[in-house]
Image (cartoon, rainbow, N blue to C red; front, side, top):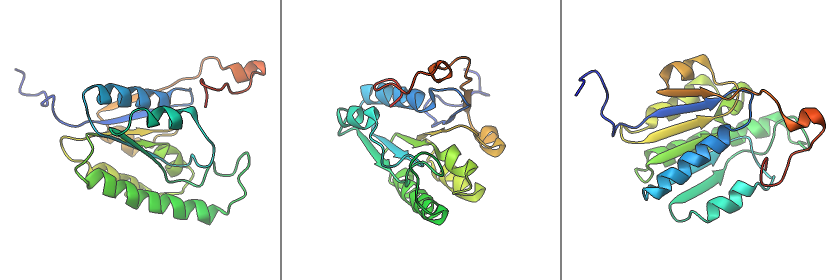
Length: 183
């Protein structure tokens, strides 16, 4: 065995980022794979809020192995957002504390912090808060962080970084988001 390689039982930090679609979907695919091994998975969604997504219903079918929590107040500054920025910041800060509790609980093999990069990019949270979560991960636990705009400090710390690149999107042809595909 190559002594320079890490033990395959060590937990990884994985980052899915980029402007293309598929970041959350990749993380959810990993979730399904993990449930196949009877792992416990915690998904915490930052930024996403009041909208009802298909994944919420799908995740229910993976209970009791998977728990999903939404800690954001919805999309910030777009669509139907009528909340003050400070309200979004408060929710994100509470979400950081909540996520840290879940990461350190010892209950989960895999924790997914969905759209955490977006919360950072929107300045709802800061670098220290992101690093608190990364540093809270046990050596056996896997941590997945999604969202466009992954900061360089996170990319440097990660074991795996995948950038989703948009080549073509139906919206460019005037096709709106599709149930079961986009939400």
